[in-house]
Length: 110
Image (cartoon, rainbow, N blue to C red):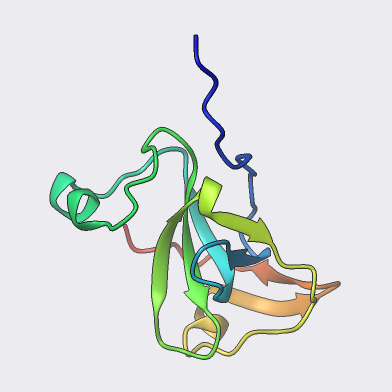
């Protein structure tokens, strides 16, 4: 069997700050799916097409109005402890405490 070098798959929690390995953006995790829940059309249009059978995260992107859906292997923890700016931040989080956001009960649309 040939070993394939893949980035380690981390598990992130809602409220955790992350950075995308390839695209460099920072953000905060809002919600997690245990595997990719996007439809086939969306997945096939995704440039990198990471393995669907891993955790996928809804991430509010710092300094924008964007929200991304990123595979675990594409994310790393962001240890900067710097808050992010996003218009939906107060909709999903109640406060910023000890370098992470505190998730409220507002469900992620999905």
